[in-house]
Image (cartoon, rainbow, N blue to C red; front, side, top):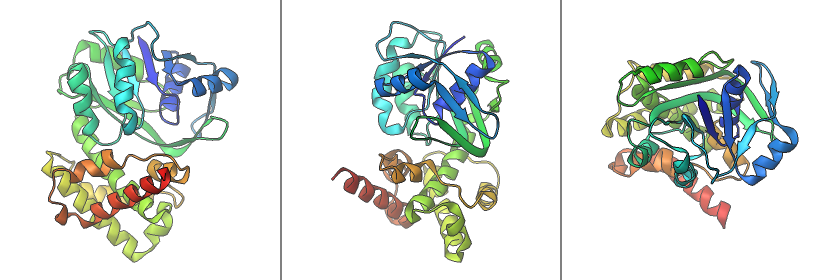
Length: 303
């Protein structure tokens, strides 16, 4: 099975590297600068779950080739360009597995490629690139879930499962992937929302009584806004996710916050704007404040 990983950054590079480490046929679609880094130093992973180095196969957009699986780990604000880049690689049997946060990207992908090609997917991982382009993965969690949007398990999906599982990172098939994605969306909205608002790791926020109250308020607002869009969650999801936040290490940061620290663009519209777009915004003051905070950051970043 030929696997194309779009991007070789902190997420795609990590999971693509683990699949290649297992022995799968993995190619990375990258921009010229990243290609030069990889050709010079290779793909390097530093992780408590095992370090790994390889000389990856890399291609650029426009290469004449097709793939069985295309793994998307791009930021949401690059999605339109990525869709154009991967279209020539897609044939009838190609699966597209996005690992983007949120849900809005599913509509864009299914409109272009069809619901039968697009899978649901998510991952939990804390990883970043250092100045040399090495992938630094630091969290105990480094797992990935995938499954069909239609809920139908086919023989080809069973074949895909055989290729994706068995790596050093837990990659698992889910029969409830849509619910899993909403659960993740709720978690990342709360976690990235409070850490970006306070420009702080989770520890100092959590230690303040007002901080925990704000976390609970944001979870409640986000859950209500998502339910208005048709979300279905696991039982007692608020309590489950609060426990997860309490158990995090003090230094844990969201990827959105790390992007802000690097002066990079952020997924403000995809994560927060999409929740407020069709909602009665007066009911969600904290979501509005966080979205406004990110918009101010974006405006001052580009000014």
